[in-house]
Image (cartoon, rainbow, N blue to C red; front, side):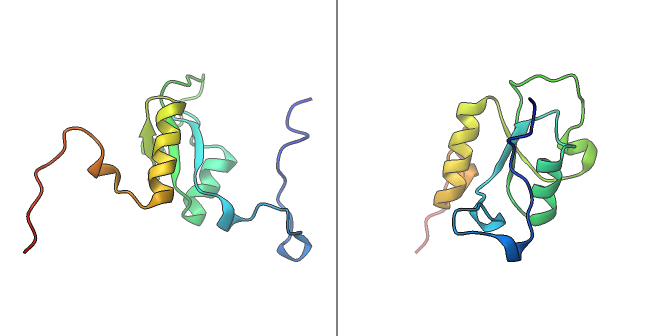
Length: 107
């Protein structure tokens, strides 16, 4: 029951080719009120983008603002997937959010 099948940290010298390493993690997605858990705090510590989902309500109230950690906010998991894809492809999120700001012509 519970998290017995969840990913477990292992020493770097014990890794295998099929293990997921920090460099393999694109982003961490959690409910926006669950930013105090190990995945979110590890993301903040290791510079992994953190995406908080507002639609997933919890009884906790531990937000990125309260912890003073950087994060992206998504309305739902579909939007979170879009943010993760944009980050992977190197797309600036401000360039795809409304309102679209005026662009300066480069000569």
